[in-house]
Length: 82
Image (cartoon, rainbow, N blue to C red; front, side, top):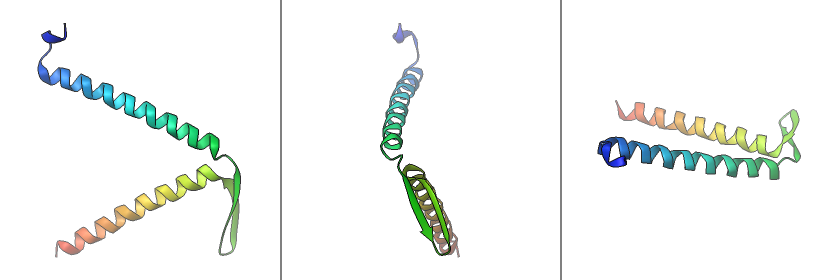
């Protein structure tokens, strides 16, 4: 029955299947990380102090690093355009 479909449709279906499996694996790994790192930690910076779950602190720093990396690439790209 799959021979009735054009090759590009079969390839698209294969990619959707692989993408779905990869997404499910990442979600399971993320859930395990959150469950194992639910202890609260105290974070102090300058005059501020806050208590939060370890997984949340890790997620905040991950997003912060991604944003800073994006800004760095953007600034370097603008410099090379000159």
